[in-house]
Length: 615
Image (tube, rainbow, N blue to C red; front, top):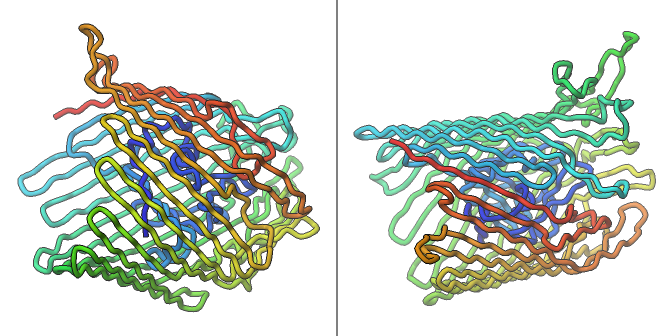
């Protein structure tokens, strides 16, 4: 399957205020839209539950219904983002029907280094980070340490039209530590990460009548990873072992004094944890590569009632458990997968993958994938066919919660796993100064799990047949001296064969244009001008019709486009100092009726970066 790569340079040159804006700006058919669960990711119209999010190839915990808190990712520490669009269940297991986003973090550096980055944008949006890298070489091995500290926050925004466009005020703190031992054949790395996120509701009066429900919530995430990589010289292979633990906690905060945090009372409302052990053996022999892997995954979800004592000494239930009377639920998944790649000659490449998955609650699954690639000079033709599946998550099965806005969210213990078949074919031409790609893809999903809202406004989960996602994606790139142009077009059509209208509402046609221009070693009379990189980004979205889930009311959203520009100045005013200025949504477009892709209009960003290397 083709993989789209977002490099650290693309992220660093973006004018976006946060991770969400940056991804949407670079790849327009990857979108983030607010819903009542939080911020929902969409790839080609499929929601978060169909997209597997990985950090360095490992799963991470999300929040209540599979939505990942993308605010926890530090853009400064991302080496690249690999995006697979389409079914990848054979490679990655459940939740990969719609695609995979693998966020690769920057490794420990070879040099001793201190880095600082600080940015300021509209709505008092701040992003400040510091990184310390220390590398100690010995005769036969070396030890490296990397520490990263991050603070970011924003005042958020709320527009005057009621119940339309808003983003809550937030504050994020993050600290991560990596220790790495490496010799010629062995690498061992231990990583730890702590993340704290506070968000604040908009209040209509101060003090608010129910501060415990409407002022602030706090999220925390703890993760630890152990990774081992062995180079097996005698058999020409590699062996990788990894252990990952990631826990995401959502606290309910009672805060009666908004000017002080001393009286804050935190209650553990929900938490989601993931433990994963992976063991993979890679063997290389002549024209044949073979991979054998074992995965053990334990996933658990918990939720509690929030019960406090009032001023009269009586117990009040402020917030109900999302799982009703079920305190917690765990899933255990074990998988064995094999992949083989055979290259009989310089023209043909064959890939076959098989994955067997055992789940403690559902029937065993066997999925497979086959890819044929034919290359002639710089022309590459691919055909791919693969099976996929997704088991219902804990909350789709056992949700039993009365939302304080007056509706229930009800799970369905009788849900069946979803199964899919993905077929794609592509052509790609790669040259040093020119590239072209076109991809045709059809993803057919059976037993699709979707939310149904009844006449009372309650949300229910049901299986539906059959849904197909058909897409065409093309990309064209030119490079001439310091000038780069990338043009991409994406067409996506989601068809429910029984005309179920609760499917995602998307623009079928999307166009993305990226322009990069670098100016180096220029002189003005006797003065050297700073190195400069200019970036311009234009995204076009075709019109669409949104259908309300209960009333069936249709809202027409006309087509629109956004223009974003940024400039990076290198080594100014001193060496190792970079400055960046950016404007996102230059034409100040917004549409309060568009619930699937909301923008606050024009935003700006200023940033300074400093790097110092030492012995």
